[in-house]
Length: 454
Image (cartoon, rainbow, N blue to C red):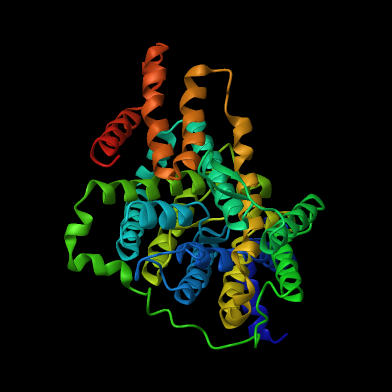
């Protein structure tokens, strides 16, 4: 190593505090690679979700361009992870969030009938609000005002919603005119492929294989090709797809502000705000705790971490994807040794490299991705154990939040019902003083949501 390289290496180690955190390049690189492998499924799942792949009878222009969303997803993940690594110096990677992409595609675009371009504007607005709240410190205030029990409920509800979508994509759960839903034909080839992938994913996860979800998807795709259920790609490396169909689309709504002057649009922005609040705060605390970075029950550089997350959301919206957020899969990288933001930089670079392997991703079908959705949902509902179910005033709004999301096929509806019932049950049990004023504001907002939308 030359003198210049040694000096640069020394500066990098000092910037990321390698010595203080007892780490080195090898541990950080392996940690960054492990995190990438653990969350690389988003490169497949997000384009399929936002393009409403598998949904029949869609009007022209309603679905997003899948190839462009793939590029937007990779770029948002790369830039977001680099922001987190370089600004906040945390071993936390970012990408378009699971749950938020489902809300974007199935609730906002398909359910509310809002054009995806306007939905991207909603993501952009939420990101800009994130930045303001992060710079002023108000973001932490809002997060702290929402009871932790409701935060856990929202995460669990989204997990059930994602799992429900995965079961539908797999053909395991189908429409039933008599009972609304029912068990599908498990003898169908693609359903059998999805079941195989689910079993394989469970095996990998139980055995503690790093990147188990990604590897299971890879093996499932190969098995699908062997049995001619999945098309064999004609090449592995190809030109990066055109991102222009989605790039900058978030600004199109400004040419017709009427799309943004609705209660629906306000609910969309607020939902993106709330869900990302819960996801980011929980993920940062969880990863930081595992890495031993929490000091005196406080998160060092919390403001910078939240700012990085906010900037990533704005960047992702401009590229053309749903909210970019911190990923709990980063804990896999921490378990592999990552302790600093250098690991996030590694993950970000790997997302950039993934752009040239786009042709391979055509082998990933809904049957291949369904197991990932089901398992990610299972991981998210782990927060159920943190809810004090013996307290009825907490159990009611938490349960209604959780159960309403999959049954109404709407994350926004679940959040609205839970946030309405919380002040009511707390007041009726004489605990009105424990209700933060911000919760009363949310109570009013969601009452208006049902009056003007539902």
